[in-house]
Image 1: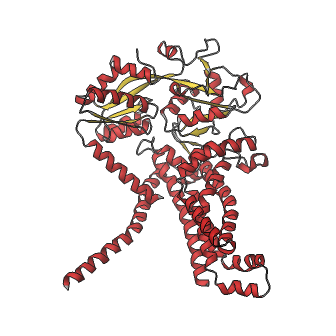
Image 2: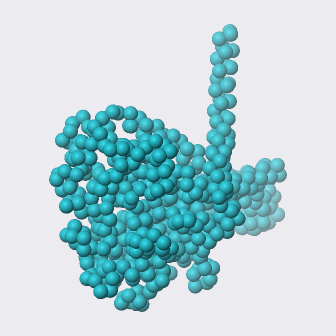
Image 3: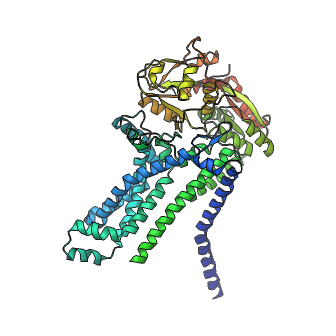
Length: 299
Length: 282
């Protein structure tokens, strides 16, 4: 009898530890980032770091301004969002509302498969197919641009957006739809006047999670955006910055971490970029979470 | 994502430690330029010395040197001299980096084969790569924009090119790569982009030249002879952009490490240098 109780106790505690593990890991990672990242601000002004326009980390003295990197990340993310959100939401609508049984299954499996493609593979495919294509269509000096990165990242955000948005649409009570149809609304009227507003917070959460996925992506971006740390000119002939190469924060960390002298300003600066990234994706995730909870309360 | 990264890092640390544990094993780490060369040395050396184990990994010159300083590898490959900062860090950690020059490498400046430009001076190269010249017509080519391709800052090749071409060996020069230069993660990525882009110019070790790229002849200044990047020209010291390649050890090499270093500098070792498209010392 005692032994059984003891067994129960051990198993319960083991599960508790596993449950806590992820929280502990996040806390440890955050602590580690803060510790090394903040060492930079002993010698570098945080405002200068965030608003500096030149990123020459290995010069003497190093110029550590990450504004071009922040703008690079934002441009690529914005582009990917603009491309992936309409397609993703429309895809979710089709899967949950319109597609007949078999098509639905195939589409769902397809979307899941898209999520399973490693980002380095997508980057490679982008490099050999999309990059020359972008160069020729827009007649640019090079195809390694923010636009190429946006298109490839849109593929990566799609599965997240589709599956979360589809869940949100699915959880709209059936009575809403039936009521709308009974009142004589057409199918499209039902979808865009009743279903979409009812699922709006879930769909917003889907969008935020998609953005979170995009801004943290590294490998594909590093391979196809050209990585030049320059603030793009936001003019029409430049497709508002999209026709120009950009360097993202993630690609900077990945490309430069290998070289830095441990303990140098450059090394700490990369951790500080990590903090900026962490804060951005933290806010995106919290926003997504807020939307998700609001939806649950409402229904 | 962060979680996954953490797990991977722990795994890598674990496996490197496990490898380093073998007594007869030599860990070589560093410059991506030299990985193929060191691998070729390692294969022949292990064939001749059964029981010896040599493992070669890349990561960049800086990665290799910092592993040597931290004691996680026994030989660091580097395509640049060790920096003062690294020497002082090594002192703190109790390691004494010992330098050995093992081969030479010519840096080829390459353009697309359809580009009519065949020769450039160092001065013109510096102007192109720092962004003062932005159109090919200024150096005798067609009226089109120049796309600058460079390696990432973790590459010894990048550092060498900046110091010896952009800054022309002047330690006080503040010359930098143009901010608009595309930073590509590997020499192969540069080779691929050059092959498909008529307006691009890039640089990398001679070993990467293929018929899809055209190396330009380089002259030290307008009065000098324009020289093609060939092995012969590098050995004779005629080609202006060539650099030494180094192996660093902790202190003067001893035991199995010394045997390996002796092999590298032997006639046979230097023949392997030639076979892997680098330039032997003699």
